[in-house]
Amino acid sequence: MKNILFRLYLAVMKFLARWRKEDPNTYVILNGAGRSGSNGYLFYKYLRREHPEVTAYLIEPWPSSHLPWSDWQKIGRAKYVLTTHQPFKVRKSQVNLALWHGIPLKRMGTMANNTQRRDNQRNEKLWHKTADLVTSSSELYESLMSACMGIEGPRYVQLGFPRIDSLLKSPYKKSQLLADFFSCQDPEAQVGIYVPTFRYELEEPEVMERIKEGNFFAFSDFDLAALDQALAARKQYLLVKLHPWEMKLFSDFHLEAKHVAFLNNSDLLAKKLDLYEILGATDFLMTDFSSIYFDYLHLDKPLIFITNYLAQYEKTRGFLLGPYEKIVPGPCVASQADLVKQLGEKDGYGLERKKWLELSDQADHGQACQTIFDYLSGV
Image 1 (cartoon, helix red, strand yellow):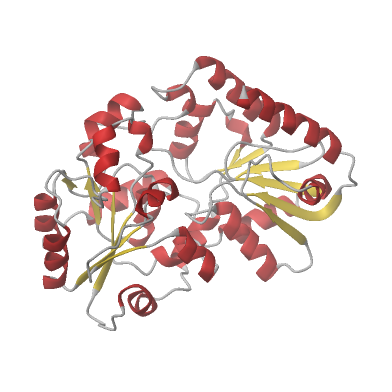
Image 2 (tube, one colour):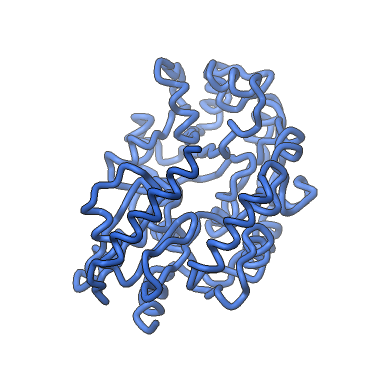
């Protein structure tokens, strides 16, 4: 019922907004990706910084039933509507560029194990009707996206992704990161970051209970004090960036560790930064099934994959590529004991990272924002 009412709300507001006079120099970014590698937010920052001659509006969170009428007026004025999730525009003459928010690894849409056919058909129709352009990085990306969303091939343009610009040209230095989160000034220190995917959809109460208790890895042998000691022995520090929904579980949790710290959305908002503007300052990445690792390949730095609930995820949602252990360019660990051992190992996956970077991205060289702007200027 809520979905029906929300679709009705969108239809009414689209009808009202389309009567606004369209301005050929106005861009509106509908951002549903927060500050976690948001192509929309980072392109908005680029427009404000490099192209003051155009008008750029950032509308977030999107979609929302609580937008003021002034935001709908901005959407109605725009010639260019850029989206991070589902495509959207209020009239045919507008140009919708779908930026999306990651190279898909997990199944979604038509390919997912946990979606309904009726919803998938509605979604495919929306992409067919609304998405004028879909920015891409490679043929692999296009194949994965089309398998899930039914996007037609001619809609893709290999312009790259704004988040890669920020990853390669990070304004945030490691010395700053160490000082802000660990009160440390050791030039020999290494900083890793752990960015898991959204785990609530696993529908595994035991996993969520472990996270709620402070076990952010959901390891059966989790021991924060022992992890802290292991990191200290190697002069390593670990930032933990959980999904915002999971961070709500930690409202009363105090992390008693000198070498582990949480990176919250509030930190990013306060600094007016996106995660990717910090990500480039780290030395290694740990994740489970997040597509963030495809982007991290640009840095050619070590990756570690957490697989203690791999079987559950394969059953609940599934993957677009596999077997999982064969397609990830880094070691897989399923326990804290394995992880601690791996932290001391020498990296030997350089060739694998290079291979997967060549497959997943032929478009990004740190100039995606400019490339996208120039392309849209000629549409």
